[in-house]
Length: 406
Image (cartoon, rainbow, N blue to C red; front, side):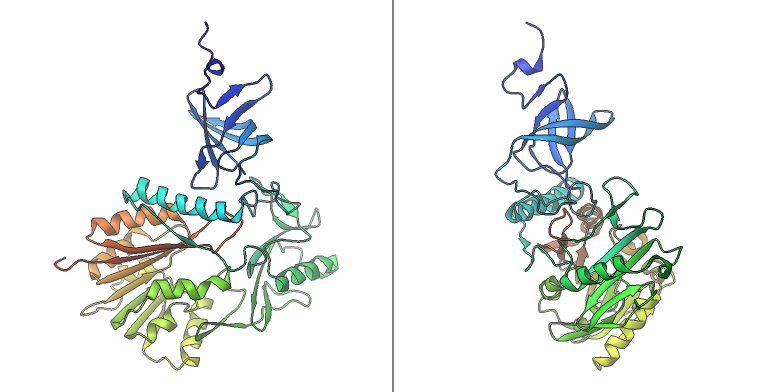
């Protein structure tokens, strides 16, 4: 008998003359399905846990195979038919093939996996709070434009080609209407060098950047809980506005104190509620458009106990920042790349009694938590929030405490 792995019934693959058949074991960070075949690990795009699929190998890197699904032979109970006609070609969504419950489960496992593998944290159960609306939730978008092909939409999966999108299933209605208006705009009114367009919605309309034709970079406002925020498409604002109140409440809990830092503060999403709980608040943000709005938002709220610094957080720490007798609380909400090493070092040097880390990437969160834990902090509470339904991305909020004696 030859050593043919397809003769072994315990193997969850079989070689065909055309391609491979594999079973998807689970969903990994990055949103791909995990399978194994012939001693190799296979990452399968757009899969569902429990699928049996016929795949084609897109590329091979050592013992890693990167594959696409040719045919779903036995669909998982988690699998549904994606409603979007662009799914699979458009690079925007990669979880539409999953039931919403399976999406939440996969995201919880992604967080747990990253924290275990990278930060060596064993957290038995992580809850991902569902979004109020799994569809038509996206209040901010960047639309790519190809003037030669006369297409507008999002990049195709794994390429820089623009997938021409007429209707996006995750946009809020106001942004969908704006997308349609942009698509109808006469070619001669679109600047020749326009390659991407940022759009965001607020309580008082839609803002686009850069401005062109009849589209303006309008200043918007949005009420979240008791706070009102001003912003525009020229600076960052969160994608899913319906989730923000829950994120803020979990991040700040019932904390009060003397001094708090809000790092990567943006337009002041956390700065305003922090200023109602702490006597002194410093917000640090590198984007000058965002800091202008943050100052205005504090002023309109008549919160005079907070100061906004326009600087990168790394530069602020390296320049000495502001010297404090003590810091009670540090909140950081860095971009996807996570916090720079100098920032983590600066936080540890301050020895705050509590930290809250708000992250949109579980892998960089795990990397930074490992450093904070090595510096003496302990995880006190953790929760996921589904800021990005229909994608593998997830917002994670971690509360850390410095035990007495450190």
